[in-house]
Structures are given as structure tokens and as C-alpha cells.
Image (cartoon, rainbow, N blue to C red; front, side, top):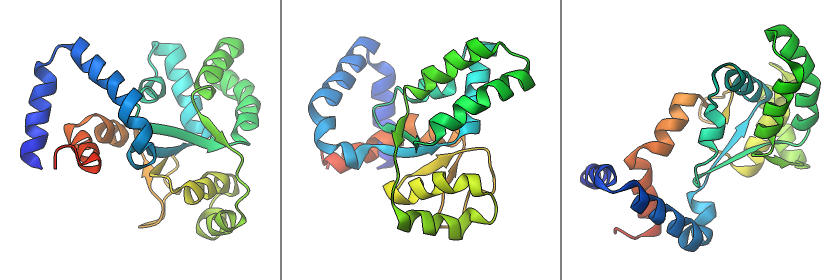
Length: 197
């Protein structure tokens, strides 16, 4: 597999970006829909990650999340209640960071439009989440419940306490980028499709 990763990486560096774009579109239109559940990385995102990214976009014109959400291999999810939570936090966060509330709110809205909000009614997942993390921070329970309910690959958060060894994966920016942009990720995709043996 290491030889494949090396060869695949070399091919992608040599190919014309237009050809790579065509291949990506072809894959998305014809193959991805058949294997979507096997190929897609599901992550949960918390309020702080969204607010921090919106602030970064407002200050620097760069958004890690908007770039990340362009990947066809990624599905970003959040509990439905997060929509209201973000609306409540916009004035507080914008005042604290001394930024225009309306402009900041527009960026948060832009990010919210890219998130799959899930109305979670799984009592078993809630009970499990409460037992794992409820005593640390009750507000994190919906994220963890969603994580268990949809069998997520991780939670994008800065909260260090939102991880339970061997049961709950906390993701950081660098870790996600590495998983989604390295040739190794695409070789795993190819292996699942059994295209390259």
C-alpha cells in the first residue's frame, strides 16, 4: 500500500488540475453516490469551533471550515439545538472580540448552511453520553450523544475533556486536514471500492 500511496501522490502532482477536477466530478457524480456511507467521514462540530472559525474568517479572510467542507469525503454534523445556541452566542462573542455583530452573524450563518443539523431523539445515545461526559460539562452531552448515534469519526472541538479513551475521538484541525488530503486517505477509498485490488 505504501507503493500505491507514493505512486498516487506522484500522479496527482503531475496531472493537470483540470484533469484532476474532471476526475473528481466524475467520481462524485457516478461512483460516490453508490458508496457514500462507506467513504464519507462524519464529524460533529461544536459551537466554539464554529465561532472561532467565523472570527478567523472575519479577521483574516480565511476559513478552515469552509475549505474543509468542500471535501466530498466529509459530512459535518451538529445537534439541532446548536442553531439556537449559536444565535444566542453571536452577540456575546462579537462583543467580547470587539467585532461587528452583523458581519460576524453573516459569517456564522454561512457556516451553518454547510452543516447537517440532526434532531436527535435517541435516548440510548443520550444516556451513554451522560454517563461518559455529563459530569464534566452538561452542554457537551448533545454532541457526544450525536457522536454515538451516527457513529461519527470524531468531534471537532477545542474542549480537551470531550474525549474518552477508546470511545470518543476529539479531532483537531491538523488531524482532519491530514486525513482528508494525504494520498493515504485516497488509497483507502480506492481499496474500499476495490478499484486497485
